[in-house]
Length: 74
Image 1 (cartoon, one colour):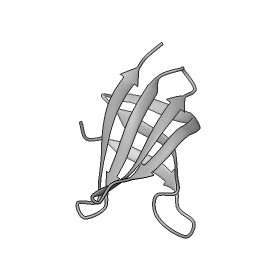
Image 2 (tube, one colour):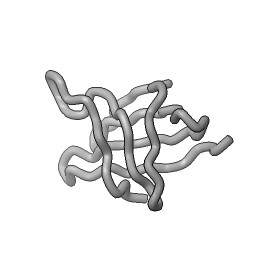
Image 3 (cartoon, helix red, strand yellow):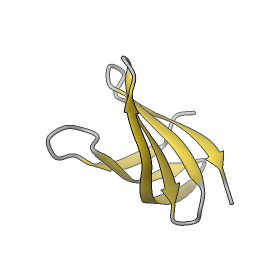
Image 4 (tube, one colour):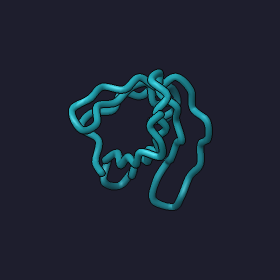
């Protein structure tokens, strides 16, 4: 599912580290990046949010669009 808004740190490249995002009308703050990987189409992250929810987030560079998938919500 597409993210409404993603705020990410961008130093040398975008995105370097997602910091917060809005998804399904709720704002989430990223507490920690647990994993990071690249595919030919995207730069992906597995993150834990401050409320304990886990998400996989992928930034598709050609489309300049974020896609999110909730892995767990504790």
